[in-house]
Length: 260
Image 1 (tube, rainbow, N blue to C red):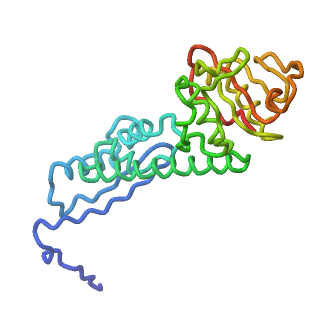
Image 2: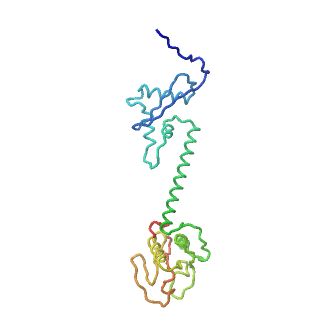
Image 3: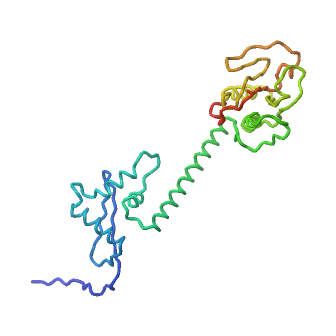
């Protein structure tokens, strides 16, 4: 009868740690299988080995791999980003501190990349509509001592539409909100003026807008009404959008998504 020779195991150095781990997620359960022969057992390795034995022997209640299934369920949660297998291993208590820190760094990098991608998409959408960054650092010194919410509105609208010719505090012959810093004129003509006027009205609550005058019409939020003829383009607001503001600030956070 032929003999079969087996390799001797004595050649392995004492304390050599050889761990072969296979991880799989199937139906919400993560199974870890680890050979126990020849392990130099440390505390974390002992936990891993015992968990693996419980899974392979089916000794963990009625469901094999229960601790991993629980970790998987906890890791799933309600989220809109992928679940990393390493997260499930970490939540099962099988990840050492160094590996856990690496996982946290990887997750942070992923979040930053996702945030940058979202910002790029938002910028592309604004550019497609002919709009710019609503916080472009526009120089507003020439506005004078306007109210802070008037200044905020000037930056929001001026940056979005690329308009830098703005008038804030100014003296007017007729009754006006300009002298008290509650008005803004954006010097513009044509279709861009239409868009600016509509954008200001669409964000009236956020910007604290009281009414808008444009092309001899006024709108306080209830629709456009025609005004009397005052004589010239400037008096009839054909060369600028006039915005008057409330005595109190708006709710803040205007939305360019409402603008064209």
